[in-house]
Length: 270
Ligand SMILES: [Zn+2]
Image (cartoon, rainbow, N blue to C red):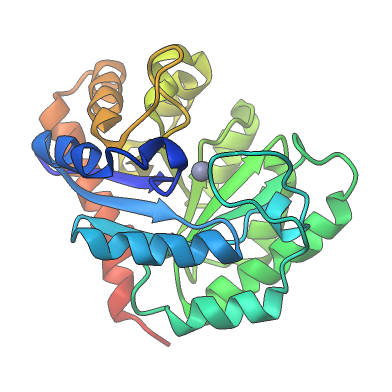
């Protein structure tokens, strides 16, 4: 089986001591690609460096909405950003690395952690969408409690030029339908084992539009346990149960989706 984890944070300090074992465990269960995601100036550099470790590792570079504003607080386990990101400077850095990365992410809007700067978040996310279109890369979107607002901006800025991947989308049914109608992809994390929300999403979205991710170390399938890329097997199993098809069929289709979204795009540089 070819399995994929299109979004995780292996640069998190929880992986500091056993990253090699974690990568090996993923490979042992059939994971063929793991996209590690940057979130700010420092972590973008970190994931590029980390990806040199093993060919299974790929990179998406991003500007997390909270980091963009310089609002990250306390110890999250990944590098935080205490002053606003200079967007043009970060865009230049990402563009310089565009041939080594598979996507732009994670980016988006987060009204859960920030209640006070919604307009600023929207302005920044709009610029990021325009940038992703300009450099012709798929975009991996974080839309926590800002699902509708993210869809509004995506619909306005992206007209099928690049694939849109909605990561851990928590929007209500009508918003899932809207994302579907716009032709977007949805990722499913292993925490689907604990979440009826993701079950609803899998029921509603065609398998041709689903991808697997872990968001490791977060979104674990188990209580109080660190998540890791090998756990995509849990997601694949659960999708198979919901869709009433075999795990092999699920894995095969998601592998095809991965190739279509992230690899076929590589040949279409502007
Ligand atoms: Zn993430």
